[in-house]
Image (cartoon, rainbow, N blue to C red; front, side):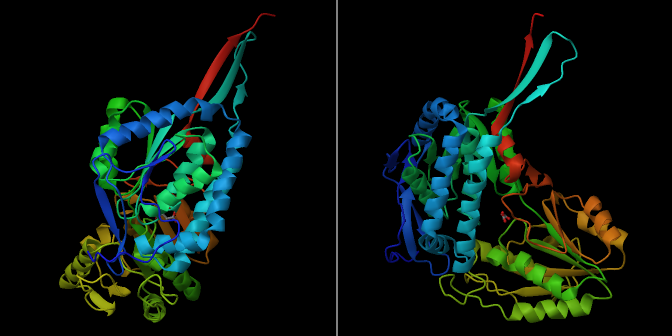
Length: 486
Ligand code: SIN
């Protein structure tokens, strides 16, 4: 790593947040964060271990009763204050995000707005955690159902949306009356720490929010083993999700798992090609292809294969690849050299196995960038069609009829997002029902809204985030049956 630190970045906090203290590691150890575009040092964070993780759990446990009993309207006001902080500081926060993660500033600003939208939405949902009165089968019982916060919740969040994935979990947890501990990805801790700063400005009671930085294993192990932590919410790989689930078994924690995807994007012969290309450009190249809901496999009807591919190639060729801090950048670097190496390997392997490069060359496995790449003549058994690419690479297959493409699209262990384009209403209904995915984009690839339930099925995990369903992940139902005298 180049050891030259970047110029001072506003809102860069280089300490972890536990209780209401900004702390360093007792061991003095640090983790260094580099800008993926330039390898310059962005800053360092404490490399906390078991001891500090336990302190965070104690702080969150002690704060729980008071926060759970705080009236929902008051909790909502605190969340709105966090939202306001994020929006007031959007330019600085976007710059911070781009420095640690690499995405273009424009996208980073959108992400901060997305984060703020979760605090906005859940500030209102806090007041709507209604219970129910259920008609009793007898005349002398009354059945009441109420909702109670789950308790101390821990989140393990990814590097691809380092602000929004913290916000989506934290806002729902706090609104429900839970206290919160977050372990952000080691590559991108600063956006999470900036949210702790927002929480501090909002005057949240000590221990309600804790952001702990460091190597994932000791922290995750401590969170999972401690029975005071009642819930884990994780966004990341299916492999790690399965491990977390296994390790949560001993203390039977509730889980929300947002895991990998392998999104199909289907273009039927009657689709509006221009609209489909616009949708593809967004869902393929957003964040340089590093999204779980990014298109992994294109299926294009044989009658429109050439016009669609040509239009996609023409639009892709215009994209500007470079440092996310440059204002004309459309595609930033991948998060690390290991990431570019993996994408380069997937492309080379596919080409060796018979895929054709329609756009782009074989990627440089050592550089920070992957240029927009289009591969045709790919086959479903190739690794590039089975694994998440997490890079700006389009893989195109053609198909002849609806039933075969449904089979191809569903032929994956994943079930997060899917997209299709057609003008035929009956087909749209049939496809929506037939696609085995948690989310379906119909003539559209914009599916991430705070108002909508984000989540998958099969190996993409379970649980929903955002929407009015999202808060239920942080609430337990309690039912009481009262016997009355007449
Ligand atoms: C993801 O794909 O990792 C999350 C994207 C989103 O919420 O839009």
